[in-house]
Structure formats: C-alpha cells, structure tokens
Length: 314
Image (cartoon, rainbow, N blue to C red; front, top):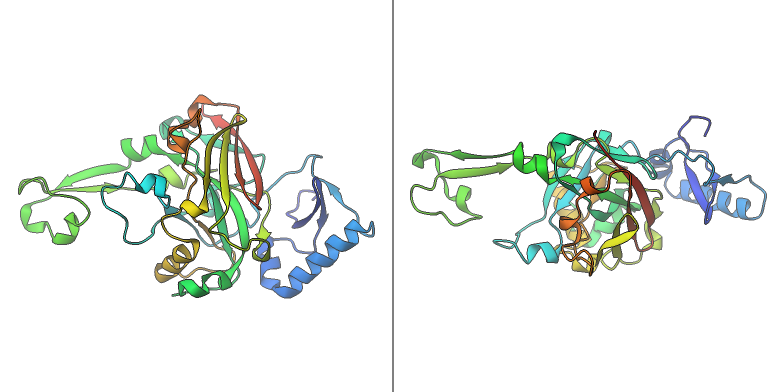
C-alpha cells in the first residue's frame, strides 16, 4: 500500500483488509495472536467497520512470504513421472532456490534465450511456522503455518545444454556408489554424470507464488488436493497430490534431515504432471516459449489460482 509492503487478509472474492504487519513473516512469528488479529480484522471488515481494498484496482502482488531463508523443491515427486524412472527413488530429492527467484501473482515469468525449452510445474508449497530439524513424519504438519501455490518453472534447455556434464574417470577412482543408480556398460564405462539445477530451476521469476497463503487449518489433508495447470486458458495438467511418490509429511521430514528449516521457509512438495486430452504429455510437453505474452496459471484445490504472463527475451 502506497508503495510499502502490506499484509492483507481476504474478505471476499475481490476484497481484502489490511493487517497491521508489514511482512508475512511478522504475522507468522506472532503465532496465535497474529491469527486472532487477522480473524478480528476480517470480521470487522465484513461488518463494514474497517475499510476494504479492491483487489481489481492496480494491486501489486508480491509473493505471500517474500523473505524466506531458503526455498526447497522436491524433484520428480509424482507417480506419473516415476513410472518412467530407471530405478525407483529411495528418498525425496531436492533442489534449492534463492529468494530472488520469487515473484508474485500477475507478474511476468521471464525466460531468457539461453534458458531454451522451458516448462511450467504447478504445485503446492508448504510454509514453515517455526524452526524445524530432524522432524518425524508423524509430527511434520505441526511445523507448518500454511500453504500457498507456485509455478516452479524448469528450463530444461539450459539444464541439459549448459549444466550437464559427463566426466570419464580412471577405473581406480570408480566406487560402488558412483554406479548405484545405473547399470555399468562394461569395465570401460567409467563416465560419471552430473546435472546442476541453479540456472534451470532458480533463475529470477522461476518461483512465482501466491496470491494467498492459506492457513493449515483450512487444508485437512495436503495429500488429497487437486492440482491443475493452464496455458493460455487451456488445461495442460490435471493431477492430485494423491499421485505423489512421497507424501507431504515424508517430504518435510526428509528436508529437515538435511536442512534446518526456518520460520517462513518454503518447500515445493511436488509437481502436477498428468496430462489432458489436448496435452497428453502434461507439463513436460508444455513449452512456455510458444506462448510469449500469454498467461500461465496454477490452480490448487483450496489454495486459489496463480496467474503470470510469459515473457520471452527478444
């Protein structure tokens, strides 16, 4: 508001009330007192005792919690994708994004020429309410403040053209763990394969989030949410978190084994992948470069709809 970051609470379809917190992280840190204050503000606004703002009037959206210390993504966490896996995953795999990757609802997703072929990934996001380390899956949701949604853009072109490499090592350097995930094609096969994800997953605007952060009490089961992705108004992926390879709780638990998750930190829990009649390959066959200037949307049951314009570097 007036050029300052402002936390708002939804009052109606296109109406909201301003809360007395400059950043979402401040509201999260306030705990139950913050939630009670938000509930009171919503009630007063609905009763006409507090002013409301019109969300259709030049609203400049930020990501709901724009200051996380880290954003994790859980890679390939979808049975549709894993049906093609060489070997089943034994644990959730992660990549990391910086906060500079964040952008908000109605902002552009900017794709450089060097990114090459890029695809959208619609998915829910968990947002932590407090510090979490070595959390048991049974307790995982106790550490969650709420959920938002993201378009987790992947630039496959740069990943495979610039950020992938095979190194042929001398036989004495090859250890069993190097070949644990693949068959070795004879004794002369001493190639080690590497793919890096910083440019392909964490570039600026590649973590569009929002518009809302929904408190966890409104989502009884994060493992049963319909996820849909749209390109220029047409649905290219229609899936569910029921189709995850690892549950949301397992993803959270595994993440806290390796990373200390802080208040406001985020995990993208897994992409929607199952296609539609017009888009049988789902998100992996939906190329953003063909839709310059068009909208790409993400919709997750109970969490709302995120819309962004595709901007391809000229």
